[in-house]
Image (tube, rainbow, N blue to C red; front, side, top):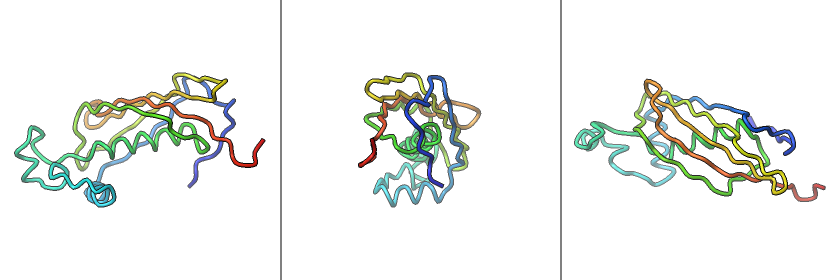
Length: 144
């Protein structure tokens, strides 16, 4: 399903959307394969048990992808990221359900910019990632 295209003028500060995903073994293995990030902390339980995490953890970049999914649900198509920053605050493990919420916190109408804040929560509601992004409305080629 493709995200809808919204007119820039329709966005409002305070709008929110969320993306919910339970992280599976396949998600972690597929992400490692596609991204090339085959760090043992993500793929080797024995290695993970010897770390401060006490076991494997999902890629932080996978959680960052959940931010992109939540943001797409919030603002739709026709928007591109200009920049983003995130802070990972707790591990995400296979089997954890991550609820990622985004909220429009600022609109700069004359530049067609939107600033979006994100919070992802995992097991027991613990914050696993916080972030912010700045996005810009695209003009389609041939559009007014």
